[in-house]
Image 1 (cartoon, one colour):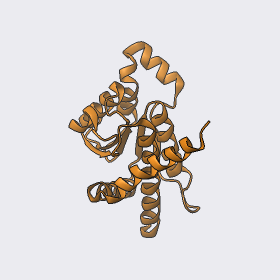
Image 2 (cartoon, one colour):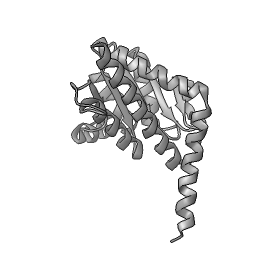
Image 3 (spheres, helix red, strand yellow):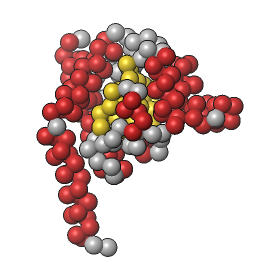
Length: 193
């Protein structure tokens, strides 16, 4: 085990975050997404997250920040994560195929005024693509978290593209961006309520 490898990994993470810090377009996208979340919540909507694997963990994490609290004690903010009901996932996968797991839940749970945030490091996850297609049909505002290219998702909705092709770096930045959005939403929403 190399101490230098530890330093290299930390430096690689910092380098991607430095790129984000210098990217005015991405900074503005983060700001605008936070404003859209506030607008959604003030209108009685909910923030809906979805992702696979590590991105599923990030989706759960960020949804929990809205429901519980982030920086200070306050009322819960409406948020759910798709894919958390194991019985629904196994039933949908069995009856309709795994590509439909998020789309089917979204169709059943989403309402006009909700905001959908799919998370995919590659931007090519078939079940996320199907969910975005369903979100479009439901006329949901949809803004995805992806890696540098945006993948196939980039043709379907707005993407916050982390400037990296490395999964670990992308996921580290997704949670950072998500935390920033939680902070901005919490401060703005409860300042105005």
